Length: 165
Image 1 (cartoon, rainbow, N blue to C red):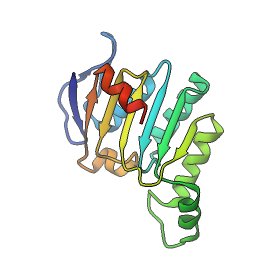
Image 2 (tube, one colour):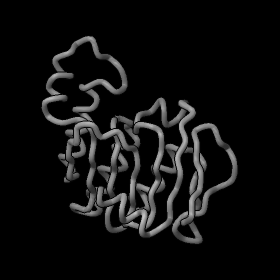
Image 3 (cartoon, rainbow, N blue to C red):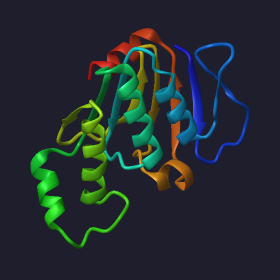
């Protein structure tokens, strides 16, 4: 199994990408974007919270490109979303309104979105052969300033297992 570490505070050298001509950022958000952009057949995204504008935009671009090959699993199901939308006291990056806006953008672009109550995982798999597993929700603050970490996985068997969760 080939593993490479990434974190929000690390500023070391590039991580090796899927081809000799590409390089992976050691910054967690950039590494996540690299995995999303690098998908050529299928993209599988799992995140408890998914509100980062750059990540949502990259996923929607990939959905248009792959035409049905993008799947997102999040913890937010219909009942939980409706309950959170009624709570006017929530005004954070992970608020229900932001989560709903991201959800609408994703589904309008053809992303297959499924709510899985209790889902707390955070990872992305591209083409069943490259995965980034991380501690961060896919929100701006933890991805860029939160001291979160991630690991790139290049083991085919493990990537396929993650993509079937």
